Image 1: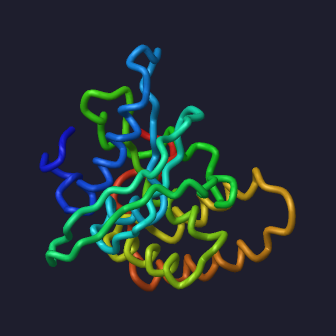
Image 2: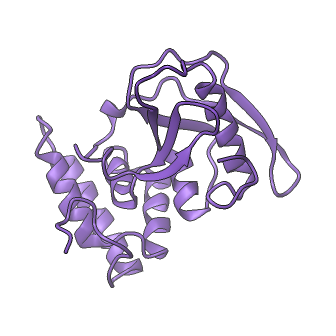
Image 3: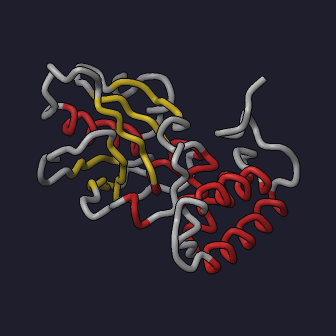
Length: 205
């Protein structure tokens, strides 16, 4: 998988993201028994799935604990010939987001980072939407709307997945339930029909 290859690396932003993970992959020992897996979340994941917004911060969940290189910054030129940069968000912790316990096994594999023991994946559309429910600010609503408008997400799928995820959390979850109800209503307006592809976690024929 190299910059300029076939999708998903078909935008300047995503090629910059790939270069960032090539820098991470370069510090991994080649003798690892199996490749490290990095699951993209946040704005980078939204861009992979929808090609809508870009985010300066890149966030990922790794299958192993890593000592990441310092100053992970990649500069690039976007489609409008504007100079931009992507920066790895060292402050991201998956514990601050609502996550289904099966998010990693249901992530969509993008492919290996060429020459390094690192495989990139992205949250499935429904798990990406679930991860937006704890904060659920304007940008999170827009991201969920982008997934729904492309028929990558349905209301029933999100409700089922989020309800399953909430079973693994303790404390007052009523506010997340309110956010879930709002998100489902938003999706049903934009995409009242079925979702493309199987729902992660659902029995397959």
